[in-house]
Length: 288
Image (cartoon, rainbow, N blue to C red):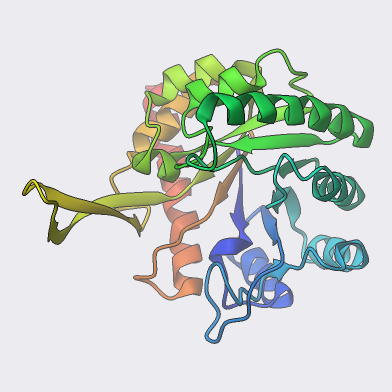
């Protein structure tokens, strides 16, 4: 199992700083965020993120990012793309860039629920994914569907229904512990078994639900999700890695910690130490 960091979660660092710090801390790889974004000062996860590769001019950035990453001794766990499945031009560019980087796999985003009637959205997206699978195979890379709250693939069951029958060498699924705390939670081992060869990648972060102090018209309490450190969120990290081991997953695990309790460098360092401890504990339990 290899560990990387998704640069959406490292907004304070330039690409040069990101690869240097992550390599020094002992990470195996990096997953670059690729999208155009609004400026922001100070930088944030979603706007002004200094470790984001712009979609505008992407092709010119590819050799620079490739050299920067390899020179630091890091590998690519994939590419964190934001091109929507229906945006064929954008997807084509992301697939080509992923192939040029040697990054092997790239996320393609799914429609948000509420952006249309669900069954119609689902059917159109399946048509889009059939096209995506053909183009991914052409480029020799894999397109990834992420389990993400408030999209048509919030759960493993929904994602499997969407990709079932497509070539698993060209299309796979990202399982995401933190997103599933918010929506789509199913038993991890059962989910991995359901996805089978479509389980291509794993994202790990954590979240927790908190009461807001507000009440609805009927008097019930309003709750809101918040990102939380790996150690303190509601997601069972140890149970998650136990299920991954039982399933036999030994691929990339990308961390995208959007909590802010610890300074960024301390956060990434502690996350790597914690994950190594968890994997060691799982190994010891299975060996006993």
